[in-house]
Image (tube, rainbow, N blue to C red; front, side, top):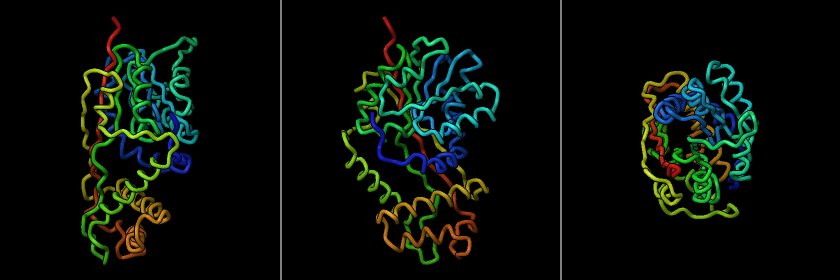
Length: 298
């Protein structure tokens, strides 16, 4: 496994900001997946949202949670967040692991305090596998890492985040958000096409789990919503998402000057188009969770 050429240190502030938006999703997912588990791995744990949610469910029953990520900035935030939450969450463990090192590095991170090897009976991975050149190969490796009877939960796909009315007025062409999404897809497609060792995966995530040898494959979809009118936290997130996405796509030449200017205007408090004055922005997305189980030992 080798990571896509993304500067995760540069992306860290965006991921940390998104943690508040995603906290409810993590709690809901952990409540469904954690009961009865003894050792959970959060692969690509980022700022620690899911790792701490899992710890709150598993640690009181004597279990362990290990969050693994390659970016030190995110791991530092995860450790501080876990300590601030206290209780079971504070006992979540975090390890710096380069995903390019494969499952051997993960096995080392999962060893118990006595150094004994340990296989997770739950692996959670959210928006990580699509950043790896060989997505199917990565899933194959994760399936082999599982303990017999263990569960692999991969959160990928779903429906993209929606935040804006289609027609924003102020001279901005309707459909801005759809154009930004299309441009961002072009950016990611280009990134994958240029990635050394990139392997196509021309089928869905549920089929990928079946090809990894997992059984009882299914998908659950979770709605995330912050309805209009937005609170201050949601509004700050909307402004940051539109501002950062617009700036990135403009710098790469993937949107035209009119849409780049629209993103600038929407996030400028001095402009009449500033989103901060509106009561009709919102946040709505659907997160897919694809599940598969390794066959129990015979």
